[in-house]
Image (cartoon, rainbow, N blue to C red):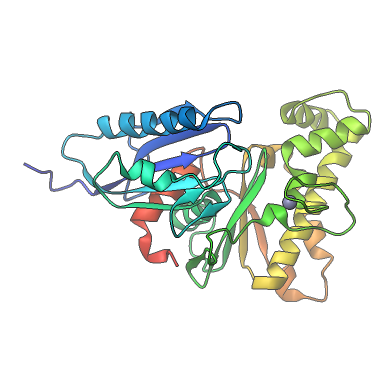
Length: 313
Ligand SMILES: [Zn+2]
């Protein structure tokens, strides 16, 4: 006998450069307890090992579903680039996967529909659904962490582009910087302001630490190099957001990811850089806020590919 109170469940898969996670997420955007599983990925692994990590977390999460669960589908958010039309992925940090058929691999484990989008789009969906961008129709969700990623919702619908890679805010070049980027660009915001790149810049100025957490502690202790590093990264992120807002008239940008917590003042520097566009009120109006999501955000966003399918373009 099926429960009359149970809503639908989506299985969410978050495919990243260091780990893959899977969990069941209910239709209110909550991870179902006891269904979250994680396995390592990373550039040191073979294609077969990466695939085994994916299938192990998917199989474990399926096995942990509550009895009688109504599984509506599987949503996969993957590090990009992706090929949305055929569900293939080529994560920049997993070079053994180029055009890997991730959607097909997951579909082979389940008998429900499987949707795949770039992880940045999933983050934007999660912020729009249950996070800091609820009630807004023109949103960028952004992650500042090991890399910098993002995704767009415009006029209430996701924007994927013909290949599925729209929203790569980390690879917008910003003026006044010449840091080389693995994508081939010069001065991409990811090459300037990601956690590891900010740490590397501080070290070049003579700072002695080696992690984002240490940089955060140095900032809190008043270290002038740490302060300059946070200002520099905030300025670059702000320039990128101002340019993105010039292009698509954003209302709100919600920023999460581990390095976004380096110091609260990071957001002040981001906003100050945007404020320099003083003669463009449609740019300076954009709100920049911390993510409203917990560490479940990427999984909730992947689940939104099923639960919030009406928002997908
Ligand atoms: Zn780049």
